[in-house]
Image (cartoon, rainbow, N blue to C red):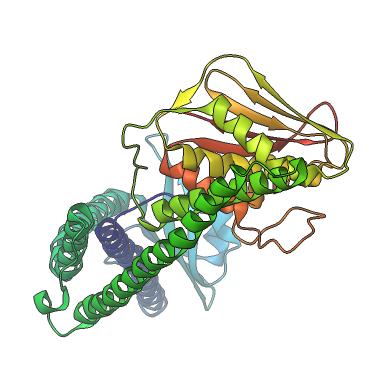
Length: 427
């Protein structure tokens, strides 16, 4: 899962890391340059000093060697054996030598060597005595790096507050609008800059979205009003026809099918109206619905789909179960789930089980793949082998209705044999 960080935190962290990194890079570069320059200056001074000492020994052999940097020796080639063995084969130039000192520690020396006209000069400079100064300089540089890092952090906090102030105000207004559920124009509260353009774009988007939602609500309201009238006529006419004494059993059965279809259409209209209102919680109006009774009615309404298939539909009730929801909502959900089970099962059994807190629809059809179980609830997605002219909206509507009332709907393949299990858990 991606870590969530506020924009200001990311800006302050980036600024502090940049300041710290730049200070550290400058410190490392300064120490390196200082070390190189110091080494070159020492080497140049040593070489110049030993050259003067050798020239003095050649021109004035009676005078002792003199050096500004101390520890100078000028020998002839005949007396070279008196010098340390490691020095005797060194060529003219400045060399790094490591020797044990009187204190038992290894010392780092710069040794300048000059060979001229049978005279050999040595000039030694103890570099180790400068280590303390280098350590102090290193500590001072490290302290400066951390100091500049803290200054960068403080400057980042101050700048981020200034730079992000309009963005923060915009986010606060959006949170306020979301909490109150009432949108107000944002652009008048901001300057004509990038944040102002963003606020203006949000205002335009909000206006278009509000108009679209309003049109959708008006359309749903108008359609439901217009459809309820003919459905009411169909229902009343069917009821009158069923009261005729001269009806045959075949005609009476067809009238019952028309009555069930009319009732299902009415229930579907009510469910779609609930979804169109986009309420966070489905209204109950104090209604308590018996799940087993609705399941029984849905099974009877779906029997014509069986036609001549060798298929049995059974209802098993393990205990009473009631939900605080309109019967129309539960009927629409079960009609889709039970109807799909009957449609995809060519032979065998469709079992509807009512438990204490759930209802399961178990079929012996071809089943579903585990990876497709969640995808089937998406709009426009149909199961493999689906025929007819369906649009793949049934399960999507079921999912939305269940989310509206806090129910958990799912599908899974059967573990023991072919088939699928659709479940609604009432919470």
